[in-house]
Structure formats: structure tokens, C-alpha cells
Amino acid sequence: MIETDRAGKATPSPAAGRQLSAIAFLYDGANLLTLAGLLCGVLAIYLIARGFYAAAMIALLWALFCDWFDGPLARRTSRRTAEHRAFGAQLDSLADMVSSGVAPAVLLLGVGDLRPSFLPGAFLLVLAGAIRLAHFSVFGLDDQRTYRGLPIDTNIVVVTAVFALHRSLSGETFSWLLYAVVVVLAVMNVAPFRSPKLVGGWYYAIAAYVLGMTFFYARLLVP
Image (cartoon, rainbow, N blue to C red):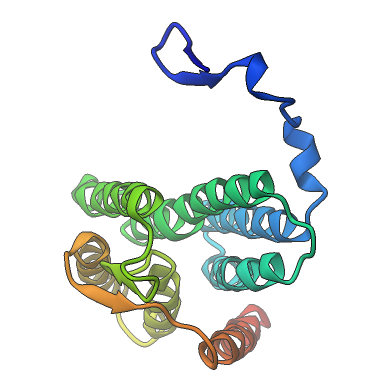
């Protein structure tokens, strides 16, 4: 039996079975890795607000790493219940919203010196990310092989790659370049085209990208 609260949201009936506490789901390596990625995303936002852009890129890169590898860790965890899988899927979506949606939007605002003209681009990316993740939560993969639209974690790959040009261009030129990139990403996140699910060797490619770009940005932190 499903009951509803005052807001009309469905809530499990006590008769439906014993409900695990929220903390109980933390005794799971994959969920902990997802939370580590979420913390990296929050750290990136903090660093952007402080103007430490190179360090923020490193935080975003490791948010990407956590997002890619929490899934394989979950699949290798024995006796993982259906509740743990469902909880992990919801947690992953929320972490993606922060790291791949909100953090790049805040980066755009920071690079744009918080000018009002940069708000539409930031809003667009956040809205597209929310729509993209909600759609995936409902419909999942097409035929277990393809996504509808560009996966939101691709935002981190593109933004961290483009940001490598930050010191090669004037501040004004780079800020508008990043604006254009963010708008394109937002459109592609919700576009109806199909993109393949990247598996196999792509995990090695992502790990190599994270390590290589971490080294690149770490060198920029050295005076």
C-alpha cells in the first residue's frame, strides 16, 4: 500500500516492510565513492568562488573519476541489495547535478566576473542538466546501449579541456568562448540524438585523462 503526504508525494506504507535508515546506505563502497564525487563538486564550487580556478579544475576532474568508477565498484560488490542499487542511482543523479551541472555554471559566472549577461548561460546549463537527469531517471538507456542526448558528465570533460586555454587567451575572449561552450553543452544534454554508452577501454581513457589533466593543472598551482 502506498500512502501520500500532505504535498501529495507518495510515501511507503509501514506495512510495505522495514525501511532502512539513510545512514545504512553509507555502508557501501560505491555510494561512498559517489559521495566523494559530490564533495569534489562542492569543493570545485568553493574554489571557483575564491578564484582558484586551476585547483577547481582538479576537483572537477576527480568528481568525474568518482562518477565513472562508482558504477564498476557497485557491480563488483557482492550481496548488494535492490534498495542499495536504487539508492545509489538516486545519489549518483544528485551528485551529477552538482558536479556536472551547477559547478560548470558557477565557473561560467566566475569567469564572467558575475556579470548579469552570463546568467542566462548558467541558468541554461543547470536547467538542461536537471531535465537530462530527470529524463534518464525515468527512461534510462535505450536498448541498454545508448543514451538520449549527451551524458551530463561529458560537461566536465569538455569544460576542463577548454579551460586549459584560459591563460592563452585574453580574459574577455576566453569568457565568451566558455559561454559558447556551455550553451552548446546545454543544448546537447537535452537534444534527441542518441549517444553510445562508453564502456570497456573508455574507463582507461577517462582515468588517463583525469591523471594527465590533474598533472597539467597542478603545475599551474606552482608559483
